[in-house]
Length: 394
Ligand code: NZQ
Ligand code: ZN
Image (cartoon, rainbow, N blue to C red; front, side, top):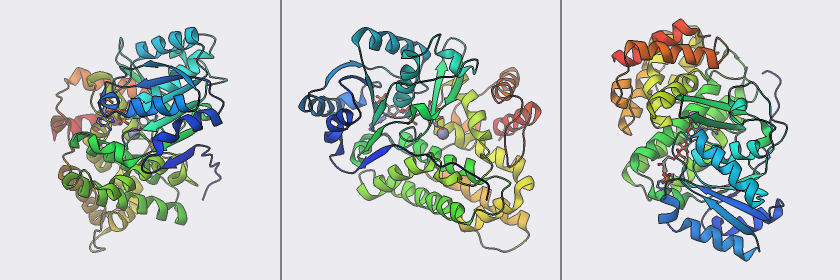
């Protein structure tokens, strides 16, 4: 096990009715004037925004609002938010929605206190010294932004989707009511489950051999998500299944399932971010579409872990060679994706990139990663291109 820092400062209020505690939580963390930030309207239609406003009013907290955040959130909306918050004297940012809204909030929080343009952070030409406090009412179990240090923004003019990570932006609190996720379309529920799984897989497929407790937590989390994702495809209003998946969303990306590893792999995330930037696909679906190709490309370089994954997560019997067991695990995972309506190729994802686009994505992916990415196998631009091609030809 390698040295690690585990820092998960977010106060989580989990369960039915917890959105009614929002006002008290904002007050606890010093907010007096809040930006209520939300997406395309699901939170308005469900009545959640009204309940959140009531909760703020009961705690004597003033607010303004900005909706319209899109999946793969846009830089232009972030800039609009920064301007609005400065004008309105906002001192607390409240995300009501999913990862896109949370990430837009985090970016606004950086931008309000930054000397310069916020996109410079995402281009990694500048570092943030501060971020306005962010809180979150979660409506989709997926990105894990409610406890993560990450924010992912798309510059819609250039089609580049980039992340900026800093503990400064970890939310002060996360309100997680599983009932709020029951209105999700099945595709978004499944895409969220794929993303949750991937956050732990990215931390699991590494070169560190001895992480007994971390591996047990990771494997338990992945089995739980697989089991409950299948339940949710048949019973979208099953509270317990919603709850298991929602809790997994937070724990999968708050660092817990990577304690003692070498920083993780995260190549699939790098590959997906280019798909999201260029083709605006749902993040979790994009991950599922490349995972099988990535896994086949790298597994021989990380055989013990692929074997362990096959046996402990996918339930593959320990029969045959290690290689055969590992491949059965990859196949089982792809069967699972298909069973919840997730793609296992770019074609199934609904896109058909040209050769030039594949090359451009590989180039951008390598550049964003500083030339190379991965732990299961270190990937360079040529490897990334090969994986895109595999995913495109299946
Ligand atoms: O905009 P509305 O109308 O709210 O609709 C949203 C959106 O269309 C809908 N939705 C959310 N909650 C709903 C609902 N519809 C009905 N009922 C509800 N309760 O779902 C759609 C997707 O929302 P989004 O916020 O985009 O989903 P997600 O949480 O998957 O976030 C994806 C974004 O997060 C980034 C992704 O790259 C992507 O941009 N990520 C952020 C991470 C982080 N900050 O730590 C890590 C991840 O790896 C990821 O990269
Ligand atoms: Zn993700």
